[in-house]
Length: 241
Image (cartoon, rainbow, N blue to C red; front, side, top):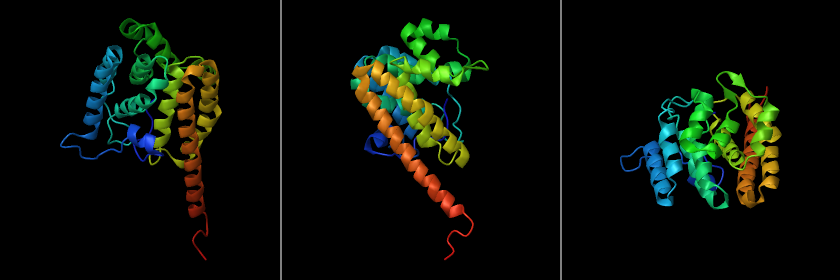
């Protein structure tokens, strides 16, 4: 699910390249268009025509705005895609992983049947997208089963980790403090163990899992420090000497 705000302040230099800040002028082209075009031509250059079709297909559904009210909804998928580009050399199926990045919310958010994904993009992408679908047409999957199944899939596990990086990064200023804390707890309780299990099952992708894990741990550590500082500042008597 797309959650939070747009690509925002990064937590390291790799995140800065993958998740650019919104609103920067780019020779008369808005940031969203620039990153859509750059992704499109990168996919063409790689010969990733299936992923390119997925990029265009999903963009026809994600036409709204994100929760901040100012950022294009599809900026979420683009940000994840630009991050996954940086770890593509460590993936067994980089094209299918990118296709799943662009498609990962279409079943959950727009009720697209997994059979249509299969018909257009094949069973490998369909399986990953279906595993990433937490709720389908109003019917949620049990949370433990959902994360367990994701960990067993070499594509869905990478996409879910990258998706969580962007959601954690962009939730500040959109989620309440309590919701941010809940989201970090869920990340630690479910996402990190799923990444660990996937790393064991798919050792060829270990560098990708390690990258995602360290980014998430850095985000958790930083945000918890920020939350603690906010709570100290809001405490009765704070600032009175």
